[in-house]
Structure formats: C-alpha cells, structure tokens
Image 1 (cartoon, rainbow, N blue to C red):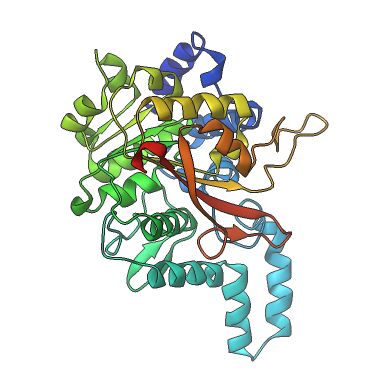
Image 2: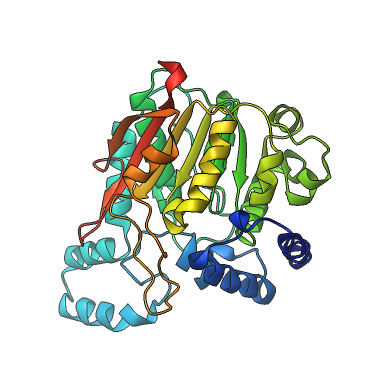
Length: 354
C-alpha cells in the first residue's frame, strides 16, 4: 500500500515546480527513508535508523539512537567501575538515556502550563510506530518530539492572551506530533494540516490515520481528487489532512496559526520564502517557528549533512513583511546545545492584529 503511494507521488513530483521539491539536505534523507519503507515496512518507522537520523528526534546521548553499539563498551566499563553503587549507576543511565533531559523539559512544560487553548494537560503520546524511547511522567508518555511541541505551545500561550487554533497549518511536520497534540483533545476544536515532502508525508499520514482513523485524516490522493481543497471544505469533512508541497497553492481559506519546527533551517532561503508567501496568502494570524539562531551547518565537499545557504532568525523578518515579531525564546522553551548553538523559538503576529 505505502510503496504504491510512493510511486504515485514520485510520478507526480516529476511534473511540479522545483520550489516544491526536496532540497539538497532532504534529497539524501528521502532516499534512505524510501528504501527503509520498502525493506522494513512502515509499522515500526520510529525504530528505523533513517527516520531517527532525519525526523524522529530522541533525547538519547548523542549518536546512541542510530549507533547504539558505539556506546555499549562505555556503558559496560562505567557499570563495572561503579559496581555496588546503585545510585551512581542509575544516575549514569539517567544521563546517557536522555531521561534527565526529558524530565527537565517536562518540568518546564508543567510549570508553564495554562488552562486555555490549545489544551494539552491530558496529552499522552501514542506508541504508534514503535518508538525506541518513551518517558513516562505522571502516568503519561512523552518523547522529545512531543515535548518540543508542548514547550512551543506553552510559549505561544504565554505570549498571546487568546490563541486562535481552529485552523492550523504545519510545513515539515515530521511524523505528526503537533497534529496528535491538537487533535487528541476535543476542547481544541482544531483542523490540522501538515504539508510535507515524500516519503515523509506518508509517515505522518500513517501515524495520524492509525491514531484518529482513516476517515478522519485526508491523505495525498484524497486531497488530489477534491475539486476545491479549501480549508472550509476540508475541515467540514476531516479532522486533519496531509498534503504534498505542490498541493499547497490549491488550498484557499484563512489560517489561525502556522508552525514550523526545525525543518525550515534545513531548506534553502528561496524555498522558505515561497512557503511563507503562501502562509501570508492564507491570511494567517500567527506564525510560530523554531530555528537555529546561528543557522544549519553548511554543506562542504559534497556533503549532504548541511545546506547550501543558511536560514537565520533575521531572514524570517524579511520573509514575513506583513508580520511583526512578538517574542523570541531560547530559555526555557527552546534549547542551547553543549557547543553553543541556540535552537530559538520565534513568534510573529499579523500587523493587522495591532
């Protein structure tokens, strides 16, 4: 089923504008993801090395998720050295597994929680896709992906008195964490749309359809068959939808909130500019971004692990001329890496909102 959808989408991709195709960084990643779907299927995608390398983040000690064998000797040596000191062993495991980091993010999430839309106080992440890590706090499950979004939403609620979320668009939404958070609570009354490249769009389609039912999440072919895929038409029939980028120009209507976490920094500036022009075209009220302040590393010597030209915070000010910057944040809602890079949240509002 999923390989057939890849073939259909791949065929359609050959006829679209290059602005809607994967950029250099993601062309390499997409090939690995497609091979893994064909070899292993999609049911356990959150355990696949290709997915863990590109769009399924973890809290595990750097490199552990994709190359666990690299650290097994280290763990063995540490446990042997600490033999008899159970508390020291537990502390070491807590650090290396990433649970201490996850617990820290959970504490920020709880401390900043407010009782208003979007409601997140009952959220517990599903095990669809067989995640390699799930941390349980207060009898609820979380991953790095869901906690990243939960912190971002709390930052949004902290800055905006009444957050409108009836129509939410995300570009590059990974496997659908934001959609899961928003759609899991009926109090939010949200229609969620994710626009993503192939084959990543298939993972979020699978995840959201498995969670909420196929009849509630429109996929690529469903949207393709619609004469008018407007936001009102889609939201009347579905809770959510997953589209490919070249379908975005066909979408009409008004957006309350646009979200992009991290994936814009992995694209080239002209691609990001084009996407944000569509966000403005859809009269979006608020824009919530997460981006490396210093920009993604540059690709060198033919490497695929970087971009040709970086996107930095100020670039968004230029790409969003009809919006004003409300606030930025690294601490406590974003993240500062050990080598001094700042994963920064940026919130914009349309100038017409005053």
